[in-house]
Amino acid sequence: MTAAARQRSRGRASTSVPYSFLIPAGALAMAIIVLPAIGGFYFSFTDWRGFGPFEWVGFENYIRVFENERSANALRNTLVLAVVVVLAQNILGLILALALFQPFRGRNLLRVLFFLPVVMSPVIIGYLWQFIYGFNGPVNQVLRALGLEEWARPWLGDPQTALWAVAIAIVWQLTGSAMVIYLAGLEGISQDVLAAASMDGAGAWQRLVHIRLPLLAPAITINLALSLITGFRIFDQIIAMTGGGPGYATETIATTIYKESVVFGEFAAGLALSIILAVSVAVFSAIQVWMTRRSEEVH
Image 1 (cartoon, rainbow, N blue to C red):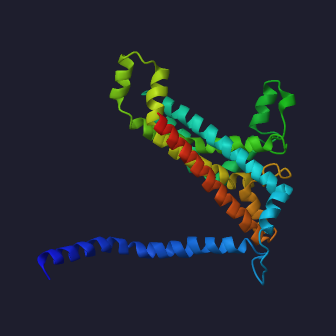
Image 2 (cartoon, rainbow, N blue to C red):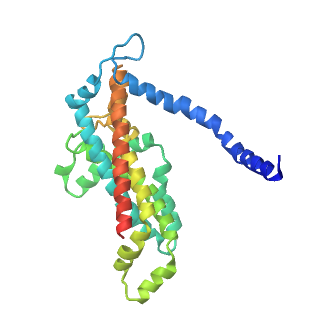
């Protein structure tokens, strides 16, 4: 074997060794993610109840999802929460990031305080806001103190306000995560560019619209994707605050999956809802990323 051939052989061996370390991780992912997902997809077309024999029923479970009032309402609530969380979390997160990016005393403390809810347990957040929204809780006490007694109500017990009350609690908890990502994006913007624009007569609004926002496009893409996925997967806070009630007013796909599978033992129906949720997240995320990238190309 010539020296060149030996060198090529050693090169192939050296590049193949690192990839061999991926085999255990790949096998583990296959065992706990891919295979269960394939099995779940298969069983969603059956009448399986978690044990015992089962029969193939085709698309019956999927048809039931759209014919069942409870499941259809859960789909609507999930879409509403996803849209509200995406818009509110990103708008408020960007406003906070722009405000806390300015140099002033105590800004680091404020950053920590606004980010603190993100690291708290969603269940704890749910119980906290359940107390805040209580009939004798802080919200109603403030309204009564202001002479707005007629506005006081059981916010989580009223079907007209329960979903919006839950949305506020979720946005309050998650806005800090969007703020941190936007702060990281702002740190990456050259101050020389902003200074040059200011010298050319660009005001604060023009610098924001024409310089900062276009350069924040990667951060915006990440935040939109993460908040959209979170909006579709909301579960803990709802279970803690309302349990999906009153009635079906705050039911989402995630809570319906839990109740169908665990409470009622309809595992196949729960799997069908899980597939619908996964496809919905994938489709909406792909559309959002495509629209964001197209916007980046335009600018």
